[in-house]
Amino acid sequence: MKDIAAVSSQDTLEEVRVRYIGRKGSIAELFKQMGKIDPSIRGEFGKTLNMLKNDATAQIEAMARELEQAETLAGYDPTLPARPIAQGSYHPITLIEREVKRIFTRMGFAIKRGPEVEDVWHNFDALNTPDWHPSRDETDTLYLADIPNMLLRTETSPVQIRTMQAQKPPIRIVAPGRVFRNDKPDPTHSPMFTQLEGLYVDKGVTFADLKGTVLQFYRHLLGKNVVTRFRPHFFPFTEPSAEVDVSCPFCGGDGCRVCKHSGWIEVGGSGMVDPNVLETVGIDPEIYTGWAFGLGIERMTMLLYGVDDIRLFYENDIRFLSQFGGRR
Image (cartoon, rainbow, N blue to C red):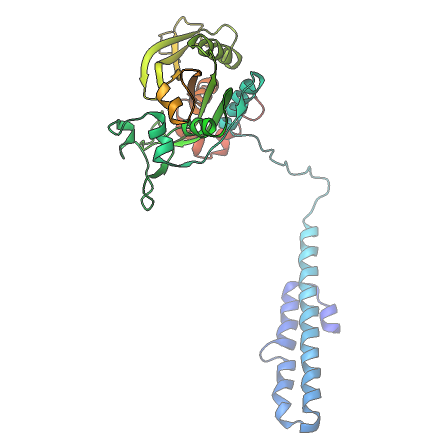
């Protein structure tokens, strides 16, 4: 149609559209004449009108796209610099987790993962946690409402149980992953965080092996001058058990704001695998011994990057997250 081809603006095109295919347009008026057409040719007449309407509609829509493209190009300046493309980066938690896994992989540990929804047996019973232990209370643990004896795992220790059930010693693994606690969010607590636990089971494994491995790990992560300190503690699944401290890598142990002027920073728990745990998974504690340890990835990330509020990792503020790309 010549009228459509001659259109030069969206307003003019709308006038043409109303004139031809609007409710009161010329094509609509022709359809109203159908009752007056000889029945012998009415079908052919209607078919021709439909073809006319469809053709006009297609031409109008094509012209609308052409006009829109022309308007876009009219405001385009090829001399302007290209718009910058934002480059993504790894989340700081991912950066530190990757570094921790890299260190342990070089030390001969395999990476193992397990389900985040666990049963009570793997999460508590097999780990020698008695029924009266406070960690089993609903005030600490998130149980599934509709499925009995199921919960969101409170640590990655169930991965150790599953691994010891599936393979015989020697076993040397680390198990990273998300864990869940019934904690109220604050600067140092979160109901969800990332944990990594290590396990070594073999003949003749001693506490000295544990101390040496942990010391070398933290020296790789925090610096070659870091030293460790083991303080007696209690965990149901290890005996003896110890909390692990490292000398503050920021002040060299002299005391600063980061270590609260103590010279030491608490980094996790450790100990020799309790013989009851080994027996539960079918490993003879008279033949094999083992050690286990754990650390919080968020805690390490906060320490390495100087972050003082764990909630910042989960708020997805691009201004915060964009600061970490490429450090590790």
